Structure formats: structure tokens, C-alpha cells
Length: 140
DNA sequence: GCCAACGTTGGC
DNA sequence: GCCAACGTTGGC
Image (cartoon, rainbow, N blue to C red; front, side):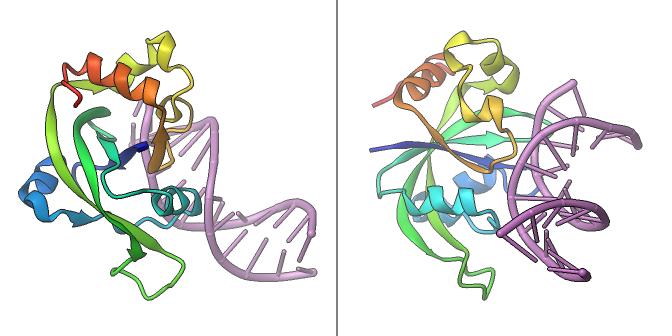
């Protein structure tokens, strides 16, 4: 069981869009970055991730779950690119902003804080628990 | 809207 | 295989 962070611009694909897909989930397509793809290849069914809104919001707004292993990205013919499917699990009672993360010593090594451009990031179990607590989210 | 950081591309 | 140029991302 591992933890991740999925980053999206709300204008392109928002938490509400994700929720609207329900349990069927949705491809996390459009990733054209090797590091991000490699992270998705490493994912297992049932892995959990944060859903992060970049740009205007810059906050973790909810929790998603991996429901399909990495498979070819349907938005391209280029065999290099793969993606997983994820579904919305629950929203954060309180969105955790980037600013909040930066001010937390416990999160100083979080990828989001240090390499905000990577669109699919690994999250450690400690970071996961910490951010959940900040967001008022009851982890299972 | 600006600009820094990063990743990718392509010429050599 | 190196590196300069370019495009994109995302924080500010």
C-alpha cells in the first residue's frame, strides 16, 4: 500500500469532475512526463492519493483511490505513455493549502513542497497521515 | 501577467 | 552523447 498525489488544474479536470465519475473512476490521462508515468506504473489497486488543485487554489481537496493499473493512455497513440484510473473517495473537510504544507516542518521534504511541477508524486505514510490530520480527514 | 524551474527536443 | 534552445508549468 502506497500513497500518491495527483495534481490537476481545476480548469482542466477538477475534483468535482472526478466526483461526477463516481465509482467507475476515470483515466488519469494526459501525463507526458516519465517520472510521473513511472509513479503510475508503480501503483497498485487500492493505493490512495491526494487530489491537488494547482494554480488558483493550490490545495489538497480530496482523496482518491487507484481502481485500475497502468494501461496505455487512450489520448495518444504513443506507446510510451500510460495511465491509471482513479476514483474519488471523499473530500477533505478542510482543504490543505500549499502554504499550510510549507509552514509545516514535518512536511518540508514533501515532493509537493520541493518539486511542485511533478504532476504525479509519491507521498510517504508519515506525510499522508499528517496532511489528513490537517485536512480534518478521518483516514481508514 | 511575469518569470523561474524544469523537461524535452534537436542540431552538432 | 552533449548542450543550447525552446515550450510548459505553476508559484508568486
